[in-house]
Amino acid sequence: MNLLTATMLRSAQISFPMLGDWSIDPPYSFNLFGLEIYFYGVIIALGFILAALYCAKRAKEFGLSSDELYELVIWLIPTCIIGARLYYVLFKLDYFIANPDRIFALRDGGLAIYGGIIAGIIVGIIWCRAKRIRVFAVADLTAFGLLIGQSVGRWGNFINREAFGAQTEIFCRMGLTVPGFETLYVHPTFLYESLWNLLGLIVLHIWSKKGKRKYDGQVFWLYILWYGLGRAWIEGLRTDSLYIGSTDIRVSQLLAIVSAVVSLAILIINARKQHNPEDMFVNARKGEDNG
Image (cartoon, rainbow, N blue to C red; front, side, top):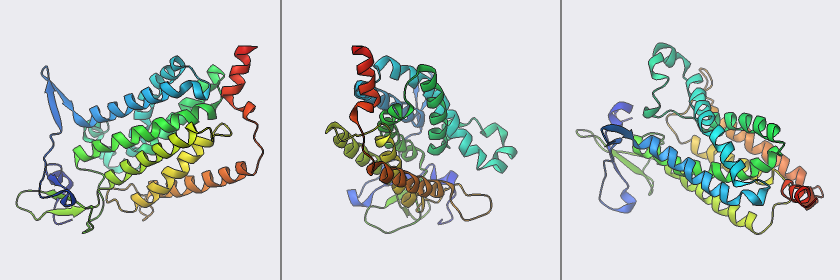
């Protein structure tokens, strides 16, 4: 990689030739009342907040109240962060066993979205059962939140100069310049994923607003298919992937492919079934309230 190490790249200036002859050097943090605040954490928090606000606004369309949604979010925030970090640590176990003090160094990045999703699903199922709420109705709603959180959160990778791809000379390349070295041009994979998730959000928002949802879980499986397809492609471009043992198999790419295939199969099976709108949780709950 042009003899540049990851540590050196963290201080690199960033440029996008397609946008003209300019570069920026965004700081990692800022001081507020003597406390150092890291932009990575601020961006992740912003993603959570925007996701929660959007989901709260649409909660009634899926049979939930905004209060119920916020209660779930309170449970999801810490567990998703823990799950995302644990997933990352497990696939770099040798390094963290040798450097246990780095396990909690979240300010340096190292959150794997699949770990967060897995942890969120587990907590969501437990919460839904305790509240007697259908899991897939909640999954449909939170799918929008995941798209928002991922779209915004990827810009934390931009600040940290991480999650980029292999060297390239394509039009939309990103330049990383360290004084004394030739500029390294790479795939801005964080940008690809952010835009892919944003596009998915727009498509699913418009589709669902037109009343196309026929059963609980449909939006969730569409999200899994959309994200899986995008991540399978984007992960293949990255240089910081987590691998299965000593193999060349990228963990996230394999999970993306498997999840996309499974979700497509489920969507096809459900497309062949007759679905009664009255069976959806939002309509069933309305019936309970009216009764």
